[in-house]
Length: 139
Image 1 (cartoon, one colour):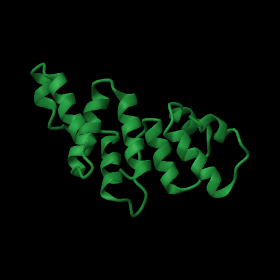
Image 2 (spheres, helix red, strand yellow):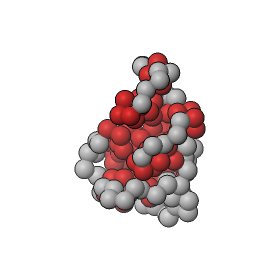
Image 3 (cartoon, rainbow, N blue to C red):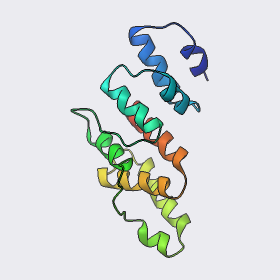
């Protein structure tokens, strides 16, 4: 709600980082990532995710960030939802993946596979926004 106004202010330091973080959680996340200059390794990672680019998690990243990076890898691995897709059960696959994405303590491989599924079936925006929310809110 406040992202556009915050990003329009001449902020520096921590305030500027926070404004970009709010921007990445807004509907204009991709524009923020394209127009702003990342100031930290975490921002470089988040900006790449916001643009749907392959990204390397920053040094010392937690399990969730590593899983998000795997979900946006350049050469995605096969995933456990393949059977559902091959058997015309897309809805069931999406429901199962949604449960994984909504579970706070998900397994890293499960999270990566759920993000890959959403991207593979054309729900790129959903995958990016979920990944950014998980990454930036610590959920």
